[in-house]
Amino acid sequence: VVGQIDLLYQHQETDDFLVVELKRTEDTPDSAVGQIARYLGWVKDNLAKENTLRGLVVVRSASEELRYAVKALRDCQLVTYEMIFRFHTIS
Image 1 (cartoon, rainbow, N blue to C red):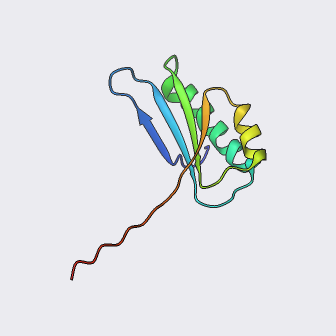
Image 2 (spheres, rainbow, N blue to C red):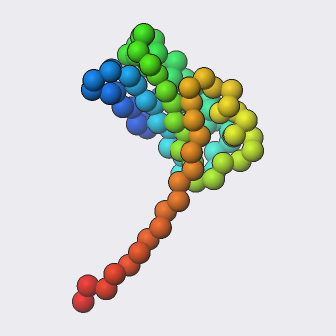
């Protein structure tokens, strides 16, 4: 109904939920925020109920537009990632 959630975690002791939206490419802020908002709404109604629910948007780089859009979502954070490769000679 809402699409495929990238990652969904449930804390085994508290039953709290975390919805994670992963972005590899530069999606529009409206698209990324719309996705996580749909996922959060569905999880709240169908799984989390009265338990705590948080969202996390993970992107390579965060535009100013995306920063403002995520600020409007309750209990949702925006984080960036960095990939570093190190090569070691084996033979």
